[in-house]
Image (cartoon, rainbow, N blue to C red; front, side, top):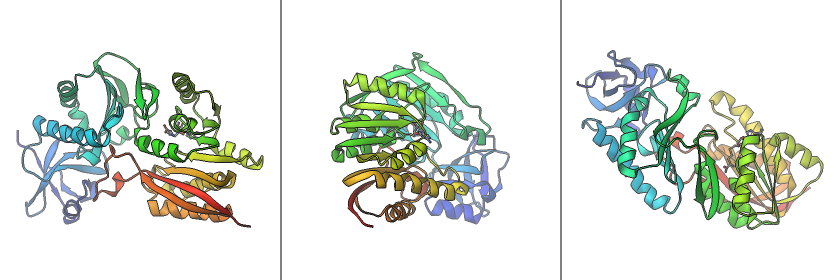
Length: 392
Ligand code: SAH
């Protein structure tokens, strides 16, 4: 059956020319009764061909570009895209057992996430179009990797924008939930069915390794989840305290600590805002602090509140660092640009009366590729800062 042709506005065509992959509903002139999730041809008013995209009947992002080519986007094409993504991982995640194999738009497979945890694969298909391709994706993974199990973690709210149900479960192979995998020489248990995201925050793998280089003395890991940063710091530090509001996450953090035979870690269930405020009032001092909060600005409307949140956390952390101390501070809100984030931290440093040097400006691990022409794919900022002076 030939793909339906969807007619887009000049502005929509300009988006494609600019290298972006999203076209908003306001730029759809005629959807030509395309089925929800269909792969469609894009044309402008003069019937000039602009590429092929997946169509959503519900989301404000009506079209996500798959290719500028006319070659049909069939199973072989999909398999090639997954193979291309796999070949990059051999270079940038070589040796890692847990990594992101396919990172949606960053791998030209919009709205598809495939995370690998050793022999287990966890997928998310976040649009009508990708959801339709799910059986093919499972088959391709089976052929390429013979996995022990393929799970879906489609229990995410964004699926609602597409009119898709939230669901999770086993798609192929064994029904397992927990799996052990190594990261930077440490062992971690991942809860693939019950954990946050697909079980782990794989985008911080390289930053956890970087943080270890600077860590020393008395350390604090705020928003520690299952102890990713904390365990990395522990080898270099006298003591590490991990704080998180999730008791389930802390349960796994304790198990991860035991798995690695580490004794210099402690965990505390608390709201990090409250904890930092109290610790600051008690004049607690640290040599290394990690701040890795969840995204505060999921929508643009939340930007102001997000700025205040980041400023408060960073202000308190900077005040509590001893001279020469390191702050590893992160933001995963793509609405907060790196420039914004640097400005917020600069304001916090001034209020804290600290002179701060930027030691490293980092981003998400390389298995989460950033597309040059799609700014949304650059979402994670990680700054490694050093307090080099106090002033009154
Ligand atoms: N640093 C972690 C990932 C952190 S994700 C890693 O490297 O794996 C953000 C974490 O913040 C989640 O574990 C979530 O449970 C926790 N969280 C969210 N809001 C919080 C709050 N106000 N106080 C403490 N923890 C919070």
